[in-house]
Image 1 (cartoon, rainbow, N blue to C red):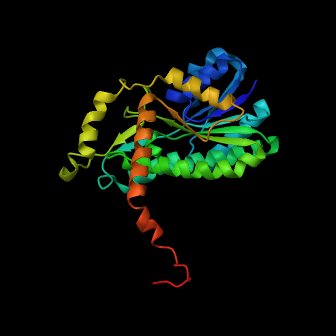
Image 2 (cartoon, helix red, strand yellow):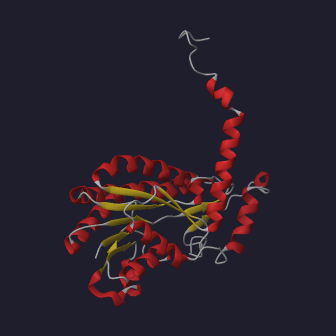
Amino acid sequence: MITWFITGAARGFGLELARQALERGDRVVATARNPRDVEQALSAYGERVLAVALDVTEDAQARAAVDAAVYAFGRIDVLVNNAGRGVLGAVEETSDAAFRAVYETNVFGLANVTRAVLPVMRRQRSGRILNLSSIGGFRGAPGFGVYCSTKFAVEGLSEALHGELAPLGIHVVIVEPGYFRTDFLDASSLHTEGRVIDDYAATAGAVRDAVPGLNHGQPGDPVKGARAMIELADSDHPPMRAQLGSDCAAAMDGKIAELRKETDAWRALALSTDHDATGSAA
């Protein structure tokens, strides 16, 4: 029996992952801004689930939630940084407040929770950290520029953590889902900016118009996605990155091919900037 600590566990991937972990007999610390939502959804699992109030943007709350987890269950084996939010609109259309709000949750919130959990895992000399990124963490897209930038930050942070923590027996996995039938495209998770600039009608504007038609018709199955994350957490040798969904895998392949084509085309320019053999600069 292992202990999971899951943020954003009231709905979507977080709730489904909590449910599957409990179904197989594990213990779950299920955190959410409103823990009553978690309690109602997972009431059948009794004392193996601990619902804790957590706004990930509050560092003190993150530390209190971890203390409660350790008090109840003695350890934390798997941290799943799932809580997140998005904003839809061109970068120029996005207000400073909306820009910062997404970073507060997706980047600084993830960092708050990770810093709170790491002392526990370091003492254990074991643990798994699953950081929810997105295909948007590897490939930017019009209309989702701000959101994608937060996921790029998560990927860079996670790569560094992977190197820092692997010698301590703690493995970091970047989970990159494509479009799944969660509530991410609902207004409760995805804020749409009210400012519209006509010059972006064919790019960010087209994406904004298309999103309502995509909601709840996405190709990814959250039940299967959660099952895949459990497999990643159980693996003795998990990958640093794991794509979920055929759409994500295809987009990843396309981006890698684009990178190779571009770097090959501009390789001579890259190599031209070194000092010459004599050590003199032009």
